[in-house]
Image 1 (cartoon, rainbow, N blue to C red):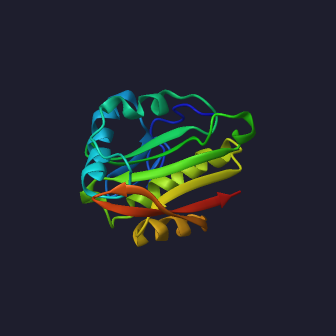
Image 2: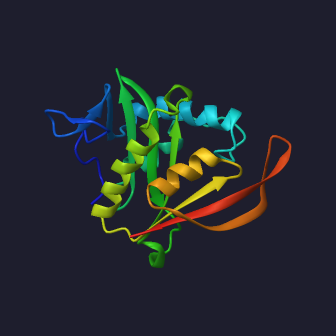
Amino acid sequence: MAGPGPEVTRGVGSRTASGGVASGGVVIRTATAADLPAMAEIYNDAVRHTLATFDVDPQPPTLFAERVASRRPGDHVVVAEEDGRVLGMAYAATYRPRPAYDGTRETSVYLDADAHGRGIGRALYDELFRRVDADGIHTCLAVIAQPNPASEALHAAVGFERVGLLREVGRKFDRWVDTAWWQRVR
């Protein structure tokens, strides 16, 4: 079942007294409404500087509010926090709003620039997929703008495989961008 789950869940490393796992002070936990401003800041950095999202204008903190509030099985948002600061987020959200897609979720992960290369993206995805799998979700999809070898390596490491390429479907930073579709089937 979706929902907040344990407030503190897991990261990479030793188990905490509350049952979560942390590494170097990084804790992976359920996102709350209080995290929305930090989540928007991380997302908007990607909007302004990367192809990780095809949004071209900064978004308000309410962008992820419905996802954070969702109690639908399979819908989850987790954040990585260190010393009270959100360093990243990952989510699994409804793929398409039709009943035949109920067993499929679209996933994504976004990190603060200071969090890259620390294993935080992997820790976020490990916890996200633990929850998604517990909810019985069959398929997870990810769309990765090209080129992005780091994101492709992360998705391959957590069990995704590349299943397709859509050529020149987005335009950002004055150029056409391809997207690769990745799929993880339980």
